[in-house]
Length: 428
Image (cartoon, rainbow, N blue to C red):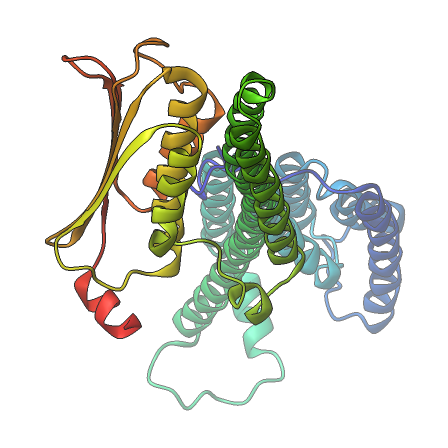
């Protein structure tokens, strides 16, 4: 699971290109510091008797800026090294402070933006800032005479209300508060910006995975639907055709008229099966309004199932109870297929003589009840693809399905499919 806590997240290290850019940046800034040192010595702005030799000043200028070449690779170490060297250079009164200040700024910022341990990065930055303010206070205490001399030399009388030294101290503190506060906050802002980008990437990846999973489920659902339709269309008609063919074989020599009737039923069943297969395949190839315009068999054709069962030799009782209500096409088709599969199982497995089919319109619920007096099969008759298809159709409509052997003999399938009266009224 991805971490959405900014404190727990670990920012990935710099790329090869970023490390290469840092190397060139460190070399460039070090060279710029040397040039700045040369120009400052030429102007004499910061010249005093405490300045070290030129070679030593070059060393401090390079030592303060060159570590930036590893700033994103080792942000903790670089910030500490530059801070220590920065103070050491000031203790030695080196003249180059302009580029060195920017190097310190960059080191503290990089620690806030790239420090992988957030607590350590926060503590290190606070320690560095505290040390810098401590050094500022100590430098005022040690060199206040030099500070006063620098302020009074060539400067007109001040017009403010505060003593000049205290005003200089307060200005220095104010500048450093703004300087370090801005650096600290910018580092945290950069870290949070990358963290938010990471969140967006994680969410986009999860969305892509969810879309792929949804697409896979859609394909699977479509395959299941096709398999269910093929089973329902083929199994019923082929079962009836098999029974009629068997009757024809037995009656062929003894009663040719019955054989002809049975063959006619086989022919009719074959044509019906082919017609339904063509309709189903046409609906699968179509899309959008065209697919919606090719409805399958519905509840109004259940009586045809009963008639075909009679032709197969069963005594069939069919009845519709309650006030018939207009049903949505999907529910009507599901009802037809459930009854069709129940009758198919009776013809294939039950060795039954009587079949009872009842359709009941209850209050907001359609009940389908198919029973037989069969003696064959087991209590789990129809536990193959047919029963799976019935369960799927019932589940789609949030209905219930009961099936099993009856106490007095035979087998029962009872399905209840709820429907919304408001939906039916609008559909009507």
